[in-house]
Length: 302
Image (cartoon, rainbow, N blue to C red; front, side, top):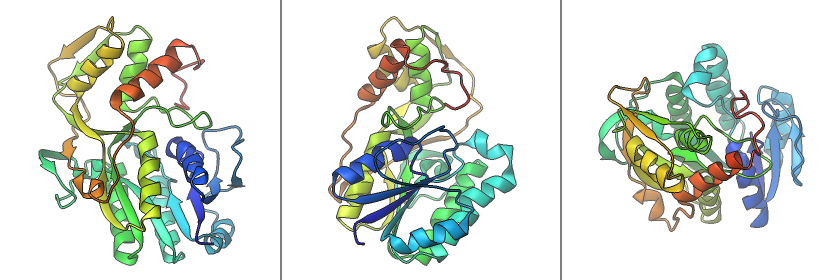
């Protein structure tokens, strides 16, 4: 049972590559998911269709696994604002229930959004300043699991980018992926302000970090990012891949006020290092769009 991992929400953006990466490295993986964004799930792994609110279905699975990677959530500021009660139920209440009913290793992805606005280069000790319901729910959940379990690994993820795997949906609502998609489509990039900092991380490096954490039995709270970029820097990196792309800088604040750059040295000190570059992620998105592999890039599923 020591290598049995339950990936809750494993059919999503992070779960796609993560599931394969764990299986390829000797872990017995079961994915539990309600297929909110999918019509089918064909990956060759154990799969249980279910909602995280269905406690009668989820509880027996907890007993059968030594590790839970909890990816299930309503993700992003906009999505969380649609229904505050539902957001709290999914992002906080269901997770706390799992923590209370599971005695094994818990891996939980939080977000660097908990920092809100901070002009400094910040470590995990920086005071949180969540500016959205999404960030607040993640902060509440990470605080709970770190208080209740001494065997929890919590990652405050940077802004993700790139492709996960061919089984999981694209996310085109993430800043690098949005701008890469527009550049590949021949659209002008509008950069509002541009001086806002974001810690960026390839989605596949979440998987390399989780594997490293499990293999080395690491617990605690860690920032997880590869490198800090301003939005202007990001636009410049996209222009390297799509030289004909036009970038328009608009001297006004964007509605998203978040601004933070983080230190990743605490987790790097355990022996992990990111493997996938920003340029690689940009090229992945540009290639998918230019090859017309996405029928409708404006579909809500993305």
